[in-house]
Length: 237
Image (cartoon, rainbow, N blue to C red; front, top):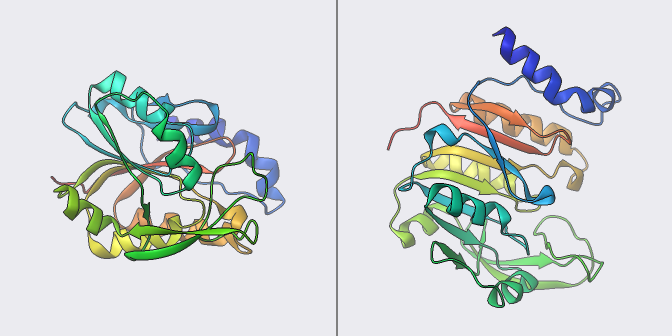
């Protein structure tokens, strides 16, 4: 337990000042395990490599124009990654890349419903990520979105070993949908976009508390307080 407390303090030290000002989050880590960081600097997520095998089912939702996490997963563990992103710039960029056989991409997004969604485009044309939640500009594009349950049925999966989500503020509703559907996810890696919501810190705290009640144990929080990694201690294939 002391090891977890020490690890939590070291992990959260850069955010303590913001926490005292009420502008950041602080969570105790609930699980100690091996860790490895994968992906480039702005697309990094922490995983527990000790429970990953080449037969694992990996979903990477929200890839933009950086698939370094996915490629490193494929290279290191010799598995397949199912990637999802309907953002026009992402789809166009991906069409010009040479990608390995194990990388399978789909041009639709993840939401708490299946249908169409307005993706608001970034005001700066040099940026890529669009959002269903944050109206970054008046420009938007209509894209296809699906629930995780519907995606899994289409792909023939009954559980997910690793679910990585960077979905620009839609994660709150999607997590609610996942917990309500009873979908089995072993490792959940999520970037929380509390900066997109007026009460974002509160929303993130409530979301994480719901995950913990459902059996997800927090084992990593990034120094900026946005990327969280969980292990589902109740996971059963």
